[in-house]
Image (tube, rainbow over all chains, first blue to last red; front, side, top):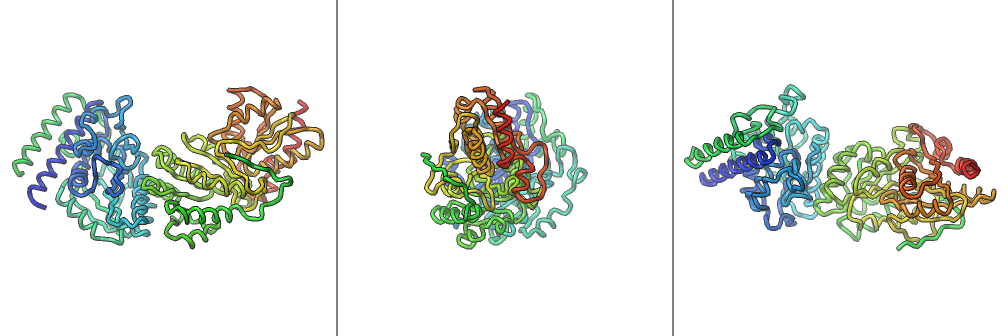
Length: 283
Length: 321
């Protein structure tokens, strides 16, 4: 990757964070913590790796994304709006009456959302089904990506899917674990630890990598490495910080679903703009 | 369009339902490559190994993981396939209910769930395997279509209609033997009840295993001077309310017979329809707050009160009251 490409993706992630803050502030409350933690990943997916067509969201040969941690809707909607799937003004209708942007991702409501999610664990299986369907059609180069949460990884269905996707040798399936180490009731390690999660995915037969989930270049190279493996599904474990980018929120379980007032919005946006200035200056 | 003929005499089907299902699925899936058959390690029990042999690329045996199977089926559906996912009725509707609800129904996807061994037909597998609540569970899901084909003739006619219906379908299916009710060549319409026999004293509304029992009961009742209408309500949802209202107007008394709990299934649907549209006395036969148990189907039918003899006794008392 060139330095310019890295800078551009960092700015895209910064923009996704700003829109996420504005989107959630428009209704005053939302799942901000787990949205901010995947902003860098979404920047790499939508502005670097994924084949999509904003003017034709249901394009048959597109790459697919299943956001299994469906409550991260606001970040995904922000990425979709920036990419041009719909007007940015729509972001500020989040959860308002008759909105097409609900808390949890809904394929029937939002252009660009590939699968309805919200009940944790299910998106992983759905993504395996999509990848399997494309494989049946001989479309091995069409990739299906999915994003799970660390709390979500406590669900049994995640492990049913882990067994299944490896058995089916779904090389066109690439998963990301947003490992921010926090869930509603506290630290994941305190509530029900994932233990050695890398060893677990390796043991299940996945091509497994663990990287800094806020390093866009690392995410890019991890995806390229995953794509080179054709006979195994890939899991990329992203070490992330819940609430990343906002000092008041970072690393706090309480930011899973938090209030964002008008004052807080302005404070958060100023903080993010300061970050954007640093990115542009090359820091 | 429906045009069906009822056999003059009820005989046992020569072909097991599962074998008919497998044959028809092979025929359909050979012509339509979008059709995929999924299972959770019950292909051997369901007799669908010939499908796997004939069409391995359209077969997905997930092993024993019902939740993942239904989630994978939803993924296949959103990608453009027409998945039929089978396991025993208890496992799909109880264990994978949330996957059916969210990944399939709420997501608006074209998934067919096949739940076999309903009620007493689970026989020797006993209480853990005896679905007496699956119809009620599936009927509660908005947009779901709920069908139990009565015999092989209906299964053969209705399967292609299920495949071409865009949306979630629950196909409740007897796995082994059943009564043969319809003449070959009969055709059926999803959502339209079949009136198998007309009589003015009472109307027996039934489905699945209970249809043959109801027809046998109607014969005995006729010999004792009681004329019964018999309705095969093979589609529980969408529910043919008009058929129930018409029967109530004609007979004034309704009895339901179902291979299921009397709550939330056929008896409840009939009760709701009558209360809201044409109140009439109703008696519901079926399992009543009892778990299933092991035994042969005929023994269990008697035990849970859905055999011909129980229907006869109940109707005789009902008509006198």
